[in-house]
Each structure stands twice: as C-alpha cells, then as structure tokens.
Length: 254
Image (cartoon, rainbow, N blue to C red; front, side, top):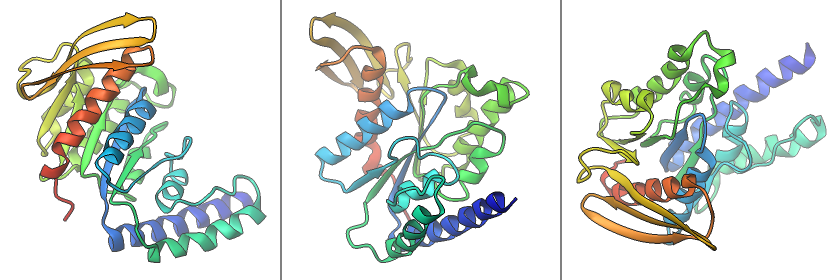
C-alpha cells in the first residue's frame, strides 16, 4: 500500500513540474506513437534535427509512460525501485524549470499499453507534430478489441491542433483512416501512397552487401540514398525524418 501511495505522489509531482517546465520553455513537441517502429523513427527525427543545429532531446531507453515521459522531458534519471535513488531525482526535477539552453525540440515516444494511457500522456504534453507509425495487435490483450486500441491513437490525432501537423502511415488501413478525425493538416508516408506530390513515398528498395539502397520522393522531390543497415523500417524512418524536417517551419508552437 505504501509503495502504491508513493508512486501516486511521485507521478503527480513529476506531472506538475513537467507542465511548469513546458510552459516556461515552450519547446516544439514532436510525438511518435504506434505499436512498432517508434524508436527507429524517433532516433531518425532526432538525428535530422541535429543536422540543422536544433537543440533536441528525446526519450532515453523506454521512458515513454506516465513516469518515464516526465523523466525524459526533465532529463533526469529514474530511481527505479530505490527510494534513496529517487531523492536526488526529485530534487533535480525542480532545477529543470531554470535550465539554460532547454531543447528547442522534444522528440518523444508515447507508449500505449492499456486504455486511458494516451489521455494521461496528453495531459502532460501537447503535440505540435504527431507521427503514427503503425497499429497492430501487439498490445491488444489489454483492450476489448482493435477498435478500443485505435481509439487511443484517434485521441492523439484529435488533440493535435489545427496549426500543427499529423503524419500517418498510409500502408496501415487503420492508421490511414485516422485522417478522418484530424483537424491538423495530414501528410502520409509509405510504399503504396497515392497522390505522391503531396505525400512521401518509398518507390524502391534494393540490397547490397553493405545495406539498402532506397529511392523515395516527397512533394515532387526525389532522393536516392544508401543506408548502411538492413530492414525496410530504416527506410521508413528516413522518409519520416525528411517529412518532419520539411514541415517543421510550417508548425507554430504558440
């Protein structure tokens, strides 16, 4: 009982500090959600923003839940199961309010494992750019059906403001259908995207001994790149990073 009470108090404390920090520093918030491929997309978006000299912070490890997300934003270590280790973490949280050179962009995974998770996470952060990678049955055991799981992501899309941006996976029918609840402009990415002039499409992937060669296009521009790793998910992540980098200046944070 005491452990549960301490967790509730800690969760509330971190939430309050996080909301103060975001109000003071008002960074651009880019969120990535979905059943799979979040981490690859997160890392690629962070990488491309770094190349344009944005100050960027993202979730370390799997810090994407009700306690992990505030820790990621505040850039403090978890105390895990040690009360002693939580004391310096709690003290460090307040100092984030006064942190100099706070990141201009937060690239954050949002983890959904049960009903209501998304609603709570969005009580912490308000996304300016939302990316949904895929929706599969990976976490379906905590929901009464796929519709309930999809509703978590629909809530995220609805909460992305009109002056923001929603980036959706065209190749997943459930993700594609989320355009119907979006108030923000929607851009698609994938292999079978229609109307290529407005959306991002991977046209061809071939392998060599060192990785994959990818041909892709977005808004009439084509790129041919080599990725020194194997797997189509790396190509998808690169395409999403390209879209974010192109659109970020069109999104307002205030």
